Amino acid sequence: MKVRLVDIAHARSGDKGDTANVGVIALDPRWYPVIREFVTAQRVSEHFRGMIGGGVDRFELPNLNALNFLLHGALDGGGTLSLKTDAQGKVYSTALLRMVLDVPDAEAKRLALPAAR
Image (cartoon, helix red, strand yellow):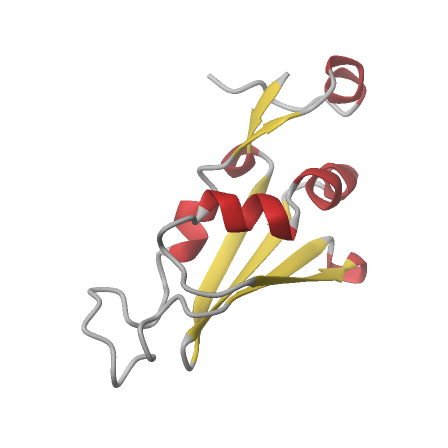
């Protein structure tokens, strides 16, 4: 089943120098394992291909039902140096929530995940 990340999580982002910091938090604690399994550093890197100049680090925060991603080289030098419209990386959270996950039907049904419309 196709599941939109925006339907099962919310996100916040900001800048840390030239690195965008994106936190993804499950809307329901039962959905955190799905996010942990399918929203990998590799998948996030592919999602932002052409938008970031460096690698992606992922950190798990299971006590918060969340993941945190560092998108290196995403801000053209950072807030005071960058000529990007979003020099503080605030839209990276919204952009990441556009990701669509392919979750096995049985797992999606068991967790009552909302299907992508």
